[in-house]
Image (tube, rainbow, N blue to C red):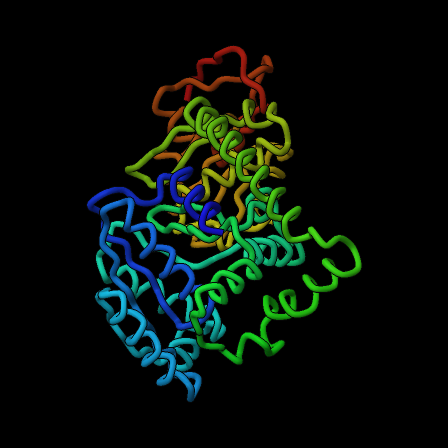
Length: 370
């Protein structure tokens, strides 16, 4: 196990000399093993560990967990900060599950330490569970990458070891740990996968199911990184960012020529640049933008976070401003200002209300006498 953790630390350049690493310690097997591994790694790399324990104010045994963590950190001479967060109240106030509220609270407190990086105890079984959970809920390539070894300043040194290896390691050291009884309830979907689905797959399908799922997730992560680099190039080629009006223009013809998967990924990238993240962006939203390619003339649709996508003759524009702001000026106003309209036909029609109907493709210029 030690060699696998050291490989992860070096392979992904997780910890460097003179850095400060914040680590959350619940008292459970995963976090205790992570803490001990970091203490061991300090013998070869000069860095500082700062520990955090969060009392979620859910379990009556929480006080025992805190005392256990205090004793552990004192034994290794590591600075520890203990905080209590009323997670049930946070969940109710923010309309979150207790599980999600607890996760948010922990990361919030870990970030407050101000360390260079945050070490968390996700392991190989967690990775397999995440992949299965995402598949069942509906996902694309990103979801089946599971949990990355490094994301921003968050590192996961245990990601290449299994829960069984962690328990064997602690047993070999005669190191006790605390047990959270809520991990054995089936109140949460993740727990049901951990307690029922994974054991069934290992017993009835293949004993190496967790390893195979994790290996596939690693391959998908590499593929996603490659595709991501190609999408960045495409974004620079066919998208125009208008910071003043907070919108992004996408070349309609170039978008329609892309491979369907690459088109969806490009649109996802556009939405990610205009929103806090992809959490509320679904395949339905991406497909609704693609459907605009089939429309004639101008049409708009509503998207999450108050965004709109508007199809014009040359572009699909995604932004949060007023409809006119999505273009800077409206299509008619732009062309009236220049007294020029482009069209493939030999004639255009102007109604009494001065609305202009134009074919979609534009090849020659027709000067208007307005």
